[in-house]
Image (tube, rainbow, N blue to C red; front, side, top):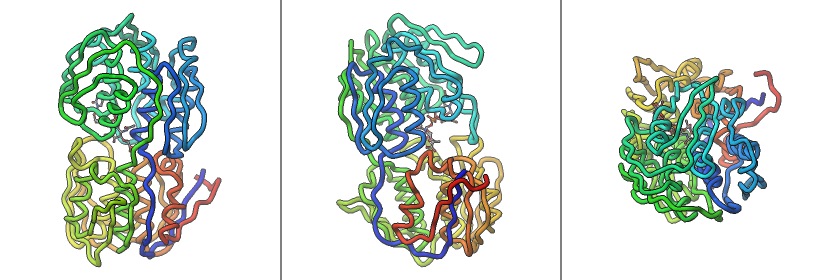
Length: 421
Ligand code: EPZ
């Protein structure tokens, strides 16, 4: 397993181009199953999750080629098993979002139940509620869910919980249904809006994405398309925190600033200057950071995927900050590792009180999940002495060559391959 070693204390300066959005491209890869023809995706980030999704599509019978420019031809799927097996779903739960496309286009899907992960139970009850409303017969057995439908029909679905994946999965199920569907209490994330744009380019008729109600008029078929993936708002937010805590001066080229209002507002509250330019977002860290209080919420609220990163900023702010996590039940796995570096954080239920500013000292720390591992790298940037982040495969799921990109901004950071895990 690889490890990353950081020697803290460098101010980050320069510019970094933001990569394509992981949480947009994974869903668009699934949506390509709906097209009667090849789809080509551009600006695709080189991430292990994207490769895992590519393997799943190949297992389903697709021809998949390329990486930065990715081609997906679902021609062979009809003759395949229409099954997403346990070994792939357990490594990446986003695999469950092949259900909607397979059910909509081929009338059947057999998908391993994802089970939980480090940050929570991650149920899919709302996904199944939506498919049942669209007319699918659903059977749960031996750790798999089997869905069948001769042809789905339009329906009204009111989600009990705002779920990004549930909204996306059911939206993909409804695009080929007979009749019109109305989805309420849906997720409004930019990635939901991007998926709707992608599907409409394929020939779907979706309106309302980004609002609490999505209307979908079913069509008979969709075509393959050529599409450029939008930049990643969470990678951009992560790099913005790196600049903020190192008193840096960094241009985040192509940052999707229109999707980052909550993050930018919180950084500005902490005293970070964030200037929107025609090239992206120009971030400059202050001499002294101010404490912040934040509660994670569905979009357009503050994103849960930025909570761990903001906690590192809170350790360097002068005063007491309070971070409350409302989306996942176990998303403070970074706290004990940051504590080993000297952070003063007290967790009480779903809130973490952070006292700053505390000087952090380098240590050997263990990555546990994607965003927690990003926070450990950020902490290493300001820690005294070397920080060794182990099990960085977690990091590689969502950040492409993060050590090269931070080094390009002046960080003293290096990856060691095959280190003890
Ligand atoms: C997506 O996960 C993202 N992943 C996550 O990013 C992100 O944290 C999350 O949305 C919230 O924004 C991808 O897009 C691939 P949810 P998803 O369904 O769709 C509960 C990252 O770091 N729920 O919106 O799985 C669920 O347990 C990853 O990039 C149900 O109860 O998230 C959770 O508490 C991590 N029943 C809450 O809803 C359901 O049927 C939000 O989950 C579905 C979800």
